[in-house]
Length: 369
Image (tube, rainbow, N blue to C red; front, side, top):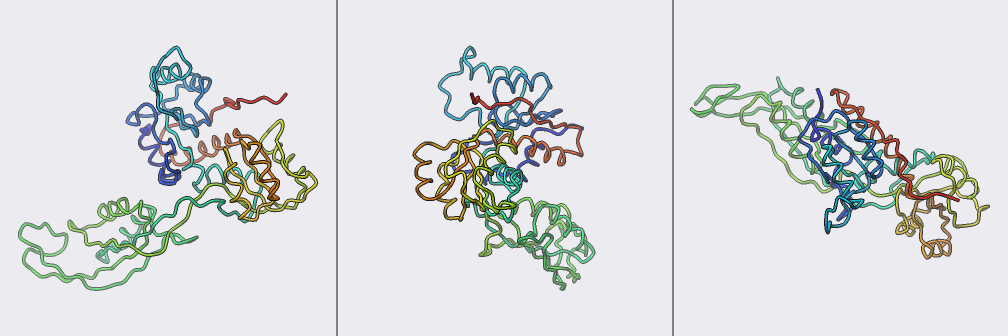
C-alpha cells in the first residue's frame, strides 16, 4: 500500500508544522497535488533542473525540498526560459513539490539541530525564539470500563507533554448521572431512567494546534454517543521554538582549528573566517542559511563564534568590532537536511510501501578556485 501525498505531509508536519515558519515564508505545496498515491519521495535542498531530472529518472512523484521553487510572484510562465522549463517538466511528469523552510529550521531535530549535532555541540539552546505554543486543558469523562482505551487514544494523538515528560494526565474517579431521552441510543441505561455510572475524569494538557485532533481521538475511542468533555485555556506555554542553536564545543579550540573542523564536517573546500585564528573559542552558535541578521542574538547568547552562511562585508566588520568571531561555511551546509528528512520519513512511512531517498545532486552553485 502506497501512502498518498496528503498522508506523507500530514506525518511530516507532525515534526515540522507550518506554524513554526517565519511570517511570509514560502512553504507548503507549491506545485502539483497531494491527492495521488506516492511510490517514491525525493528529499532535496534545492529544486534545480538537475534535481528534477534525477526525480524523473527515479520515477519520483513527490519532492520535499528546503528552498522554495516559487519565491517571488510569477510574471509569466515561458517554457523556453529556465524557471518555466523547470515547472513544465514537473507538471509533465506529475511531480509535486512541497517546501519546508523555516519551519524545518525551527523544528526539534530539524536543520539547525542537525548542524549542531554534526559539530558536536552540547548543552544546546535556541538562538532566537520565534514561536511559543499555547496550551489548553482537555477534560473528558469516561466510564471506568473504557478509561484505559480513551487515555491511550489521547496519548497516541500526541497530547500530555509537560517539559521532558510525556503521557501526563490526572485521573479522578466519580459518579456520573444521566437520563436518556426516547430518541437516544445509550451505550448504558434505558430511555426515561436516571442512570448512575462509575466514571473517570481524565485531565491532560494539549497544545492549541492539537485540540481538534485530540477531541477527534476521544470521540473515536469513547463508547458513548454523546461525549462529555471540556476544553479551556491555561496560562503557561507548552514549548518555545526558534531559529539557530547555541551550545558548548566538546573542548576549547583555536578559531582556526574550529574552522578546519567545520570544513571537515561539511566536506567544504574552504570557509571564510572573521577574527584572530589563534583566538580560543568555547561556545558556538550555528544557523543554517543566511545568518547575518543573527549577530546580536549570538552575542546575547554569549557565543564566541557564529557559524552560518552568506555573511556580507559590513556585517563582518560589525561582528569583529563587537568581539564575535564568524565562520561563513556557506548556505549549502543546509544540505544536511536531506539525510535528516529522508531518515525521518523512512521511519514514519514504514507501514506503507512508499520509499524515500535523499537527492544525490550537489546544488552548491559556488566553486573555490
